[in-house]
Length: 230
Image 1 (cartoon, rainbow, N blue to C red):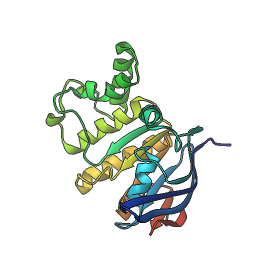
Image 2 (image 1 turned 60 degrees about the horizontal axis):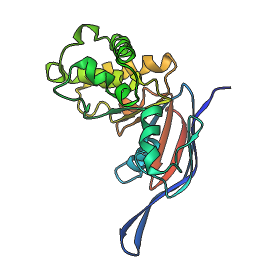
Image 3 (image 1 turned 60 degrees about the vertical axis):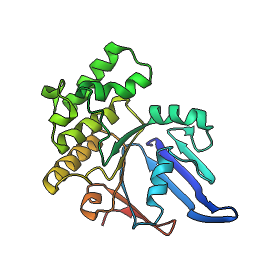
Image 4 (image 1 turned 30 degrees about the vertical axis):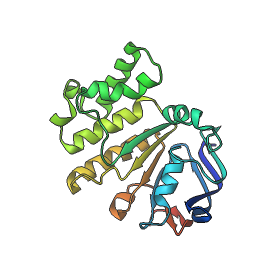
């Protein structure tokens, strides 16, 4: 039986707009994702998709419910411990790459490992390994401005993999890329998933969502579909 990477039970999120006025963005989400799954989360603007992504990434706290990630009850962690859990358990890939422009490619990949307290030798060896995984081993001393958008996103993927997380969370990872480069990046995600990496992809594009095996659709704070890609 495969490990349950994500277990969300009755997750809700309410924001206070002004004193005494609140809005409920998520209305009791139940979501289980097993090790090795590739899941796309889709929803229109205002559906609660971004809020759900922030909760999955431990970037925000749920107002109610339970969130277990890789066996850890992260939903109830105090703020002082959330960053540590995030750094250990989740590899992020963002639309805007978020690379440090004055650092070399190898230094960018190694950065999460530095924050995790790994020694320099291990950081460098692991960064070089994942640089090879994404097909850019000859670019180790380049800086991000010397790379194309697709190459920068490959570096961001290598950085996310470097901590060997429980989960890769990709938020609109092809949003800044042309259609040809988007396909190359999604084929890379597909291969990583075949190698056993658990991936949750947040997107508004059906053609990008199609690379996953499972689709979760959210509307008005509720999951309205959770099943095989169609």
